[in-house]
Image (cartoon, rainbow, N blue to C red; front, side, top):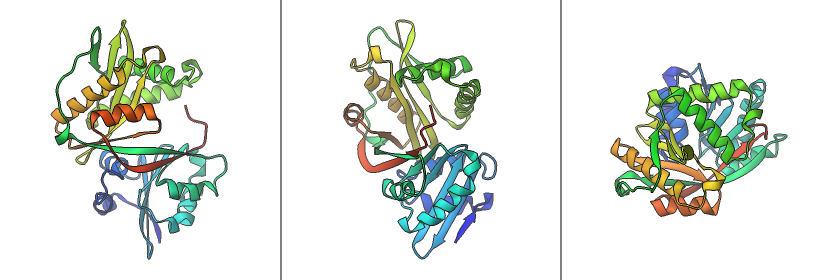
Length: 275
């Protein structure tokens, strides 16, 4: 049976998801941060095969990691019912997403490693990096610069991004500060050159996102330095666990060196239209 969830369902949904908090951190955190029925739409599928939770936040759909493959048809039903939204990403277990992909036109599957760090086991020495300054970003101007950095690091022409997308990025980053999110940037030569942030903050931990370094400043240890400082700040703030996703060996060398451990594979279906 598939049903749309209400605010009153929140406690039940959290109870189900917290059995695997690392794998479902994004869903747990957004249930905590947003009101169901406003920015957040949530469905529950429950039958003899098990239980699945599907969440839609703006144009990003997330499916609980241990959703049974047998729920593929019901999940497709939800996706098609929201076709007018223009869903850009669908996230979850890669095996399930592979099944979905066979029935969805234009979506491509990307498989990532999901890694976790126990903050109690993280060593918090405050390293330094010569000729740099570390900034904790907090203003609209900061986040505008961050957006430019992320685009440049990904080879995206910033000028091609619609103004409404730029404004949405800045507004969401500013709003995220209220929920305990943190964004760091390392400045060198009077320019932000490396960055890392946390999102999906809840009592279960947080997710590291937006790790990037300008191309001309790579292979100098700046990403390792910035992520380590973010982990240190998170531990000092009382976070218990941090999770992140990556899909290349260079990123793996950074995160595993810091102390992250791979806990699962993770999948992202993309419609190819997103910056």
